[in-house]
Structures are given as C-alpha cells and as structure tokens.
Length: 321
Length: 294
Image 1 (spheres, each protein chain N blue to C red):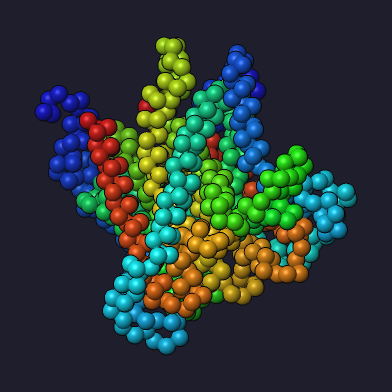
Image 2: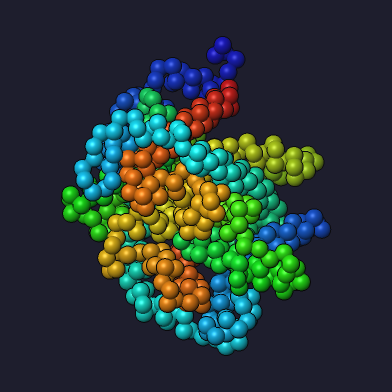
C-alpha cells in the first residue's frame, strides 16, 4: 500500500501509526508539557464552573437560600416546555443567518476581492474593501444593537424615514416590534454583523495561495468560477471549517442582540435558548431551571461540535490520501 | 505601479502582484457592486455620523436622515463628561490588550502540542478546550461570581482579563492547531537534524512563521474582548472599573439621554477600536507564508 504513496504521505502514515510526533526523535508525549498552563486555566475558569452549573440544574435554587436537591424536576419541566422548543427552532434560523449566509457571501466576497480587486485595482483598494465589510465587527454588540434598533424603530427610525423620503411611506412598519417581521429583521442584523468575520479569515487564508497558481490557471483559460472551485475553495478549506464551527457555536448561543433588540419578542417569536435561560437566571430567579436550559444548550453545542470535527477529520484524511 | 512603490517603501516581503491596467468592464462592474455592498454595510455608520453632531431640536425637527443644520458637539460633550470617557477607554485598552497578548501566547502553547506535537487524542483535547467557547456565558456567571468573590477579584479588571484569556484562547487553539497541522514538515525535520530542542523550534521557527496568523488572532481577541458585554457588566460594578460598551449601554436605560447623545456616544466609542484595527490592517495583509519554504 505504502509503495504507491509519495514519500511524504507514507511518512505521515507511519507517524500516525506509531502515535509519534512529526518531529523525528521527539515523542508526542513530551509535548504534554505545553498543554499544562492552558489546561489549568481551563479547569479553573470553565470546567469547574460548568460542573457547578450542571449541579445547579438538579436543584431548586432561587439565588438567596442555599440550593435544595430537586432531582429531575427541572429536566422534566424542560422537556414539556413549549417555549424551550420554540427557542431551539429559532436557533436554526440563527444558524442560517450567522453561518450559512455569511460563509456563502464571505467566500464570494473574499475571492472577488482577492482575485479581482487586488489584482486589477491594487492591494490598497482590496484592503479598504475588507476593512469596510469588517466594520460591523468592530462595533460592540451593545452599540451595534443600539444603532440597529434605532434604524428600524417605528417612529423616526431611519428606515421608515428613508421609505418616506422615496415615496414609499405606505410600507412603513414596526420592523422589530411585529411578529411577522421581527425574526427576519433580527436575521438581517445578524448577517450584517457576521459577514466581516469569515471575510477576514478567508482572505488571510488566501494569502497562503501561490499567486502563480491563479496566473497559470488564467493562462490555461480558466474563468473566475473555475478558479474559485479549483484553487480558492480547496486552499481555504481549513479556514472554512474553523469559521463554520465557531459561527455555529456563536449562533446557538447568540444572546446580545436578542437581549438588546427584541427581548425574545413579540411573544416568543425571537426567543433563543441563551436568552431564555438568562431570563430564568436573572429575572424569574429560577436559577435551577435556568441552569437546566443552559446545560441542555451546552449539550446540543457539544454534540454539534463533535459531529463537526468528525466531518473535518474525515475530509482532512481524504485530502492527505 | 503605485502598489509596487508602496510595497517597496514599507519593505514587505509579500509578493502582492502589481495592479494591472488591463481592467475589463466586468472588473469595473465587480468593483461597483462591492462598493454598493460596502455602502449598505456602512449605512448605520453614516446614520450615526449624520446625527451625532446635531442638536436635539434639529433632530426632532428634521428626522434622522437630514444633514445637520448646524454643527454641534453638545451630545458628545454630554456623554464625555457624564461617563468620564478617557477613564473608560483606558480600562478597555489595558484589559483587551492584555487579554489579546496572553490569549495568543496560551493558544500557541496549546496549538504547538496539538498541531506540531500531535499528542495522542488531540481531537478530544481540542474539543475539551473548545468548551470555553461552547458553554453559554450565563451558565458560568454564578459559579465564576462566587469564585472571584472568594479570592477578592470581584469588581477587579483582573477577573475580566483571566476569564477572557481562557475564552479567547479556546478559539485561538482551534484555529492555530488546524493551521499548525499543515505546518511544513521539512522545516521541522531540518531543525531537528540541526539539533534544535522543542523549545527552540517553538520559539525560533514556529513562532516567526506563524506570525501572520498570530496577528490576525491578536486583532480579533482585542476587538472581541473590547466588545464583551455580559460578563463585564456583571463583574465590573464600580463606575471606575467599567469598560466602554458598558458605559454606552448604560445610556439606553437613561431616560434623560436623547438620540443625538446616544449617536455621539456610539460614534466616539468605536473610535479607539477603529484606530486599533486600521493600525493592524497592515499586519493582516502580510502574507501567511512569509519566510517559509514552498
């Protein structure tokens, strides 16, 4: 089997079989040393608090008297709670708005800016473009939400004022305050916020690509779309995975904009798990139930991440062969 | 030509191809579309800019889209005095800066073991570290609050520095170990043959070669930490310890504040991050393979 492989890939296969590092004579176990600081910090700030939170989900705790054991009460309530399921359905919309659409647009933008703008209009124009699209990421969520809430608000909002100004005053609406448009406008705001992140990561990945590859492809008569499929996409596969996973996690636990803009409403039309658990924690003082929602959300995120890195590993393996 | 001169002046090693003059109609069309898209992205910023320098009377009379009839700094000065803005900027700068540096270092240590060292079970270790990113922050608030109160760091910015160093380095570890996974093997082997220790390889080879990715991470961590809201709001209760976003958002609940003040506050609050980002724009543009073999 190894005979047919190039020396490089057979070397890597041998390394994997022996569980050795890629540095010859340096067993991977010696690298454990480098994980110690990170692991201790993780234990203190994340793992212990997370276990604490799981414990709280089995208690009746209202934040004042010490927690009392409640067994599965919170969890049984959770599975029968309509609002909880609605919040997860809204999470799927958030994934579309924060992962799917930004990655698709980000890919096209990154490759247009890298492949067309940078080559034909110069590196300065390209980096200005990137800076503009990255701009919403610079805004604190608190500020971004403030501005957006103000643009979409019913009286004196900029969008309604704009519609009025171009003679479409009849279309004016309470964009974030009515159930028919609240979710879709929240999604639009999330797309606006998220877009710059994949763009910047993809563009930094594209810089690994040898420009001669594009030139050779152009000389061979490949058009933009063909170059995109054959060069751009494979080159930034690691970055696409990183962005997709981190954005999915962010989408599942999105909180800030919902808290600032719609408070989950009107009704439950924009409620998300993270906001729902927050209200239980800090408004209803049902800390035990809030902890159960947060734990359930974490379980979902962990499962999604495991499935995801499984896929990532499979793709990486296929690439190596 | 101009690009070439700029490149030469700044002395970069990257091989950014010179802009070519043979631009087709299609190229111009793409540029035009990108500019239109850019204007949409900047629309909220433009609205902020239009209203930050208006008087309240002006805003009430003419609405959010008109040009200010007179240039007014009232909103800005109201906000500036009310929240002691320089103090808030300083709080934000040093916490975010420290988090960015520490989180990059921590990510590098982790990713070196995972991506280069390929320790056993690395996929599960990455997932374990990613927990910092996965767990919703409100689930950590109560326990962290009690722990930090116990050790006397509650209401201290050090609590923010420690918490976000861990949270940001989770993303850093994930990104960097996936990048280090494709690190040129030939370089590592050559270094070992030359007798370099693991620490030397880490410090003198892996670090310089991955600088472009590290600087992207540094920029992200700084901006993300700067913009954090929930945990700083819960942990920094003293006015004197608060960060910029907390100061701005405290305005929304304040009935006395008017729209123009809010616009001015939002605008001024993003200036420091904007400056930081523009400085590091250059770092972001640097080629990722600088100095590496091909």
